[in-house]
Length: 419
Image 1 (cartoon, rainbow, N blue to C red):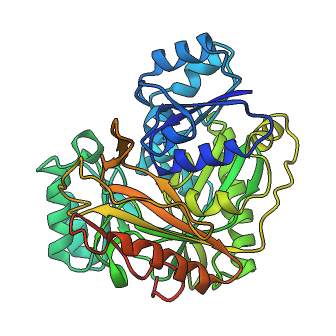
Image 2 (image 1 turned 180 degrees about the vertical axis):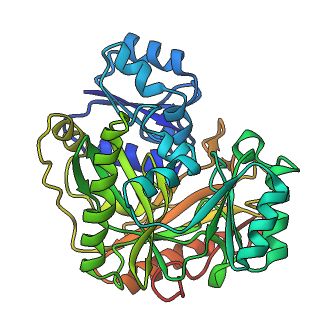
């Protein structure tokens, strides 16, 4: 089969690596791909939101299946466009992807279908938002309603910080239309985890849980990012909490989306938190998480394309998992998630049997050398029977970046941090 992967980040590189293991897949294309993907697939110079061009490419290159990685093309209607042309595509329609595209929609939806989540109010008026914050006190969470590349959430530890966040979004227009409405949300105490699932209508097939580290610096300090590393499975997570999340969150969400005439097919991502009253939803995404995908897919024994074919044929894919741990640490450009330099040459990335490298924001020059093109540059991961061994191998590998002040990474990704 010929397969097209839409996107060019770390998640898409993980998908490409998984597809490359399939005996059913003969040719993999990525649009637009990145420097690392280029070594394993044919990169196509089409942006992930150029819907018409993507459809035309799939038709003219006999693409058997298209897998959509990021949220932007989903909300641009790429799945709708592919379906209209009778093309096989895996991902939710733009109507279903609204569960990620609007945090206000997601909160209204969760309240309607009794899905556990934090109390909240949505505002477009800055003074009303400030009044609510002063009434509720801190800590409190401020979220841009729309897509903000993982940066539209402020966990405010003081009322003043919360008010500044609201002004940044509603007055200063920091996130454009995405921040023209804000969701002000109760702060929930507990450990976070991510639970993704293959979904088709009412059918829900959970993946292994993962935990990512959102804060930029060690010990969960600094600003929120798109994720500085992750691990899977989550040893301190009880099976009872996973079962609760599937039964009371994932399955009701899948059924509720059918009721809303937004039936969901693709990957539903639930960002969850273990509270004293059981798991609650922090956010939904309409696609595989990043960087969680980079540590979950390496543990999946199944052929990914066969899983997708089975799910769309209403057949249980019977997911099987390696009895091991996977940890991944992100290397980011200095300054991320704020402003940072691009086109910085990377040190030599050697292949080892102990670690794997997933490229996110990279390009490759004519000499075959990699350079940075984004904030999160790459992820170094390891699959091992023992969690500490995975950590050890990763941090030994990462020493190659220690003498380069243009990049940074967290030194506590794994199991010993308070996250």
